[in-house]
Amino acid sequence: MHNETKLIAGGMVMLSIATGALVVVPYMTVRDVKPIEGLKPYTSMEQRGRQHYIANGCVYCHSQQPRARNFAPDFERGWGRASVAGDYAYDSPHLLGSMRTGPDLFNIGARQPSDQWHLGHLYQPRAYVPGSIMPSYPFLFEHKPKAEAGDVEVNLPPGFAPPGQKVVARQEALELVAYLKSLNHTYPVLPAPPEAPSPTAPAAKAAP
Image (cartoon, rainbow, N blue to C red):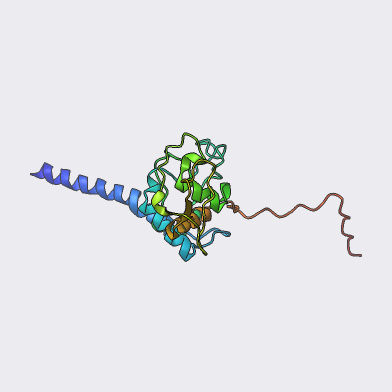
């Protein structure tokens, strides 16, 4: 009985230490993270698009956390600098992702700033990336014989539009694209160093 008490007490101590190290300390570290200068909060349209991103399972195939150069070739892949805590100050829930079936999207808004590219890619990824295994999302679009006033028509590459029909983006597609375009973390993490004086500039005269 005495040994069982020691075993239970030791287990509780180990659980407390693990909880503190893995839960409490990280929470205390990031709870007061301030947004980096240059990071903007999501607009209402971007926030709705973020919900579509979650609902359609994009987070299961795409990460949003490029790694440092000494850990992985993410920068060479064109995914941008390594992310820091302040990049996610407005994110709730965080969508870091743990799979890279598709490319990292931390900077997709900078790599692909075109609305038409994003809309067409959502409608039929293989029209833009041959051999892509990304699923298409045709339910985010409508087929119409003629685009109406206010419609956003998708200009697909030849051979991918349905014959005699126009592909028109639904509001959900426009909101999702707005969110994807907001993923632009090209602002500097650290402030720029002060400029050095020009070597050709005349030196200031000393006061008499």
